[in-house]
Amino acid sequence: MCSKVLPYFASGAVTKGFGRGSKALGIPTANLPESVVNNLPEELDNGVYYGWASIQGKVVKMVASIGWNPYFKNEKKSLEVHLLHKFENDFYGEELKVIIAGYIRPERDFSCLDGLIKEIKNDIIIAEQRLEEPIVNKLKHNDFLMINKTND
Ligand code: ADP
Ligand code: RBF
Ligand code: MG
Image (tube, rainbow, N blue to C red; front, side, top):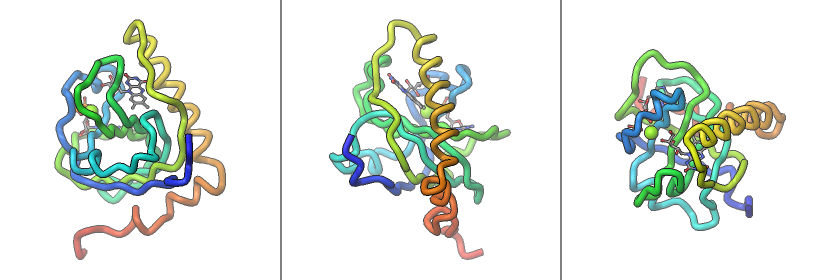
């Protein structure tokens, strides 16, 4: 993985995803709009990443998946973000900003859903650790995440 495009900054309104009930699996993923996905640089390989996100004025850790989700054989590329924070309500339509800070692994196929979920839980452990490293940790203070689009 060539990291010259990292950290990568992206933002957009949270859209409806594939509705496969990833929430039921305990891993809801906020999907970014197609326009954001289509504008991702070629150098940003498909795969799993960690970084920071801001939503509703809060900055939280995140893990993200970029690609075609081989396990589900998607026909559309997606950028899905699982925020490492418990939210009481959905936030469809709200502005989500992300700083994709580092790469974890390529996307893989799995022989069962259980295997995929275990791998995602491991991605979360890796993300939690890497986001504590000083250089990566300080990205959470980046203006990109702080500046609110509204004028209040
Ligand atoms: P969809 O297929 O529409 O993306 P999901 O089952 O993946 O549906 O759920 C994603 C939605 O859940 C998000 O768009 C957001 O509104 C909500 N949500 C609640 N908690 C989280 C979280 N921790 N991370 C990401 N999304 C969350
Ligand atoms: N889908 C895959 O097909 N293969 C993967 O390796 C994979 N890794 C993921 C890692 C993370 C951190 C996240 C948030 C999602 C990943 N997905 C992957 C996408 C997953 O299939 C999708 O979010 C499902 O809807 C979860 O049930
Ligand atoms: Mg989703």
